[in-house]
Each structure stands twice: as structure tokens, then as C-alpha cells.
Length: 212
Image (tube, rainbow, N blue to C red; front, side):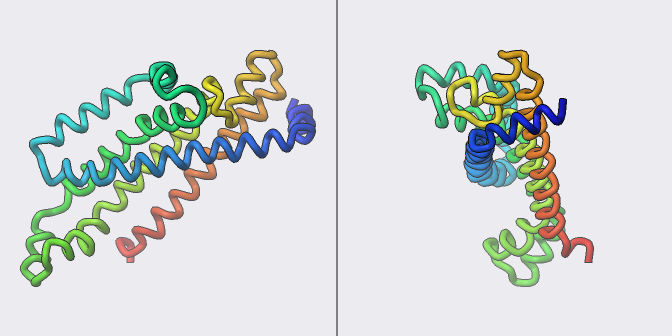
């Protein structure tokens, strides 16, 4: 069956490349938007304990809603295609980054910050030179979690005409053609693995000072 899948892939290589590019565009856009929203929000929650419970719980509840349900709800407002898919995937990606950012900044030892202040560092310098490096491992762990979920869930974008590797998966299911299904499924799995390996390498480089 693998040989048949490879043969199908070679016959439809242009369509396959297009699907991979679209899948990556949707996934990377969702991760970028969620990172830009979740990290500042997580820092704000870590420094304002009174709002942290409400904000984090609100996004956690949103995460419980299936991505497909969010797509269906968004369609009457945002239409079909890239935008509603981006919206749904962004909602899915925010909670892990938000929670890990909050935990990373919240769990910094106060004595470390007091020591830095005692050495004459102002609040801005403490934040850049001390807090961000100490919180970065957990922030990147949240990003890795979100990336895996987004790449897998981006297959649902095919349901609303956004394209991506989901086209192969759902076409294979609809036609009961294992060849097409394997092309889409294996490709999504490989993208997830490559993303995990890449982000692990980034995390390893970003935290190497902690191992020296």
C-alpha cells in the first residue's frame, strides 16, 4: 500500500506541494498570532494576580470547545477559507502558551529579583536580563505544545475550503481510498515530528546558559 501511495503522490506532486504550503501557512500564522497575544497576556496575568484566574480560565474554557465547532460558529461571520481557520486555530493555540508564560514568570524566585534590584538594576533591565531568560524554557514548552496541536488540527481547515493536507485526508476517507489517506496522514505526522524536533533544538539553544 505504501508503494501505491508513493505512486499517487508522484502523480499529484503539484497539488501535494500546494497543500503542504497552505498547511504550513495556516499553522505558522496561527502560532505567530497566538504567541503575540498569549505571551504579553501571560506576563500581565503573572504580574496582576487578581485577573489571572479569570483570564486563564476563560481561555481554558475556549480550549475545550472543539476546533470544528469553532469553525462552524465562525463561518456565518467570517465566511470560508483562510480567515475562519486562522481564528479557530489561534484560539486552540493560545491556552498552552498563556498558561506556560504565566507559570514561567510567576514562579521566578523573588529573592533573585531582589538581588538584581539590590545590584542597581531597574525594573526594565530586570525584566529583560533576568525574568525573560528564566521564564523562556516554560514559554517555549508551551509553544511546542501549541505547535503540535495546531498542525494536527489544521487538517480541519479543509472542511471550510481553506485547503491544506486535510484535503488528502478527507478525500481519502470520502473515496475510501487508503492511498490518498496515507499521503495526507503521514505528511501531517511528519510535519508534527519535524516541528517538535525544530522547536526542541531552539529551546535547547535558548536555554544552554542554564546548563553551562
